[in-house]
Image (cartoon, rainbow, N blue to C red; front, side, top):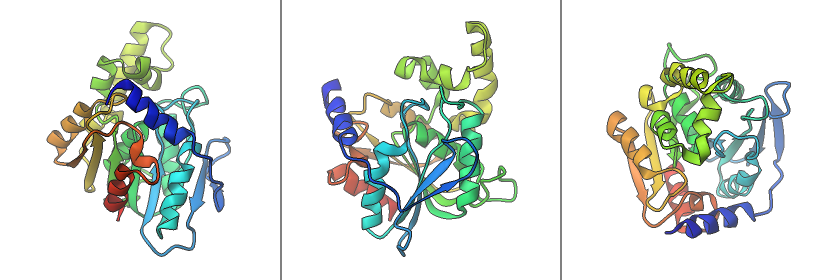
Length: 257
């Protein structure tokens, strides 16, 4: 798949009409500290979803609302989490603090699902859940984590300058110079980078072989280091797994079940 193929996948997802939630919960005073609920009466698996968008304010949870509604139609209970993002009060550690607060509010889920930058946040949470030494808000957040095309290696993503330096924006905020930003990034990598954080719950990764937004090598590195299961989506780009009706969506639904 060429870059045009990834763009077609993105357009197919973003062109879907947003689906309003059945309920919305608040876990803080900021407008982004909310969670949308779908399938509230369902008896199937409980899924908590962290959206992507390279942690930037321009990308919110709305593009995954059709996906959440589609899971609800299949009998799942879905919590679609919003969080503060870069340019809207987020960055490190605020974004992670929001995720922990939202998971603490929601309580136990069967699966914590993250896409792209949301995959990084889900893998971060996987390192702090499931035991007495869990981070506050993450104790028993989920039985397992499924991450789709995650930014699973922040240091490598920073070196590759993915999405025009998104990791620099996320971890380097607050530096008054390039040198200060780099110092902040390297100081924060040990607490933010999934490659340095062994998961405490089972992790399954799905990654398209034609993904040009987040390279497949990041998932391979994480799987090799931490023994996570890696499922390759042959010929798939970055977005198709979240577009209802695609073959990749079917693979993801099976993984969630």
